[in-house]
Every structure is written in structure tokens, then in C-alpha cells.
Amino acid sequence: MENKRFAKNDEGFVCANCGEKVMPLGYTSRNHCPKCLCSLHVDINPGDRANPCGGILRPVRTDPDPKRGYVITHRCDKCGAISRNKTAHEAKVQPDDMELIIKLTAGSMM
Image (cartoon, rainbow, N blue to C red; front, side, top):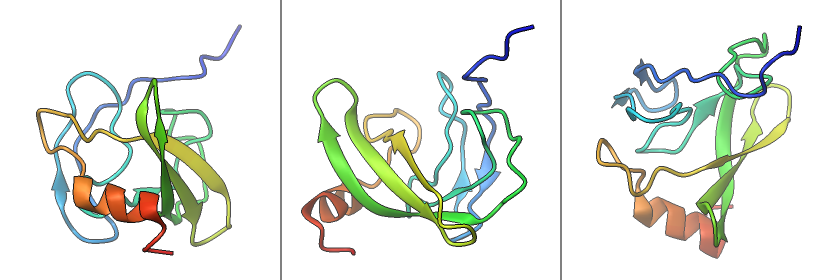
């Protein structure tokens, strides 16, 4: 049996970093807080919640992408793993903080 590489898991959550109540996007899996852009290291493949690490993934930079908008690079506080995820800066429900995305793109947060 083949495992899917993406599992839609669009549930709300409370950010483990800043305490923001995060609402579901409604069209895909939201994996990071729109206020501080932090996430939890809980997925092996997007949405599967199969990673036992559970560390906080902190944004270290964002990069513009002509097809995907902006892509956040996260680093896990616990294990050091690096992961990437597209932003939801144009979402109708709780869009990502564009000012923070720009700061990370300019490298002023590192």
C-alpha cells in the first residue's frame, strides 16, 4: 500500500510559541502561526502528524517564489531539522503577518 506524501489536516490550534488562537485555512493544511510564523515539528510528510520530535520550528528566513508566493524556512529548536513551507499571506482567514515575512526576506531577523 502506498503512503500519501500529503495529508490534509486543516485544524485550528493554539500557537505553542506566542499563544495565538489559529483558525483553519479552509482549503489546505495550516502548519504555522500567522502572527509569529512558528510551527511545531510534528510532521514527517505534510499533515501526517507522525514525527515524535514536537520541537518548535522557528522561522529563520523567507524566500520569494514566483509560483508559491513566499516560502518560510524553519529550524527546529529541539533537533535542528530544517523544513520549508509556503506562507498563507493572502489567506482570507488570518493571513500571515506580511511585515514579518518582509523582515525575514530581508534577513533582518536572523
